[in-house]
Image 1: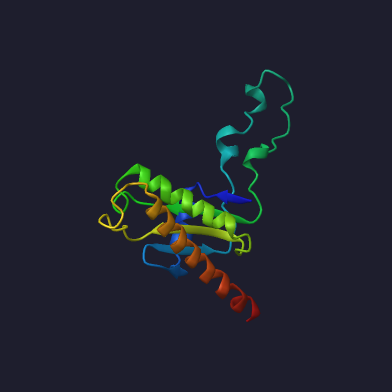
Image 2: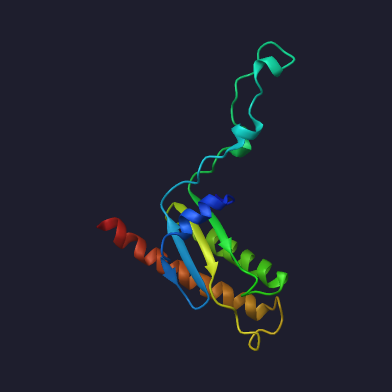
Amino acid sequence: MIGRLLRPADFERVLARSGRVRSTHFVLHHLAAEPLPPVWSQKHGPADAAELSTSAPPPAEPPVEHQPPRGRWLGMVVPKRFAKRSVTRALLKRQIRAAFQARAAMPPGLWVVRLRAPFDREQFPSAASDALRAAARAELAQLLDRVLERAPARQAS
């Protein structure tokens, strides 16, 4: 299962590191860590006993949906300056998610894929063409395959 990076602090931690792999349009950042714990207890924790209408509050356990998934977490940065139309940004995000789900052997940790250059509008005039979808998917597959090629070399040393 691939979790989602949601907190700005997690994005900052990963993006503070230099890009692990680059392609023409994308940069892949990685940090071998888990997301920061949620701050739900500060906002949604139990009130003081004096404020409760009952005498004994139940013990505070984090809800199941706030438990972090094990394994990999993915964040995406697709800025408007490189993909003006929302249709294009959504298409690129879907392709990024699909490429990650197809690579189950990715090392665990926090991953951020960042769009670093726009796709040529003369070559891809439609905001969500099949040609753009195929080009993005092929480039992302090549990018993730390069990460998988490098991963055993780092683990052996």
